Image (tube, rainbow, N blue to C red; front, side, top):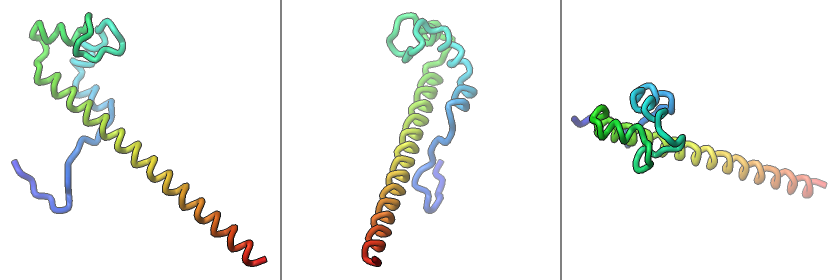
Length: 110
């Protein structure tokens, strides 16, 4: 399927962690049973998700989709944070420039 939307460069995930948790309730429930709290669900021993894959109770495509959406959300959050930092830095620069201009004008008007 091709969608022609002039002016739009990309369509991306715009969600938060809660929506992913609600979409993948089964995977989130399985991850609570993992041996380690910071399990990446790839190579750790005692991973409930790896066990579910081996048993066949979890489809590999579903887990792949889960990882993909988590990755997209992470990149989006990083991009948003970077944009916020750039805006804050730009405001600081403008504020400094304005302060310098005011100081210069005060010196010249004495």
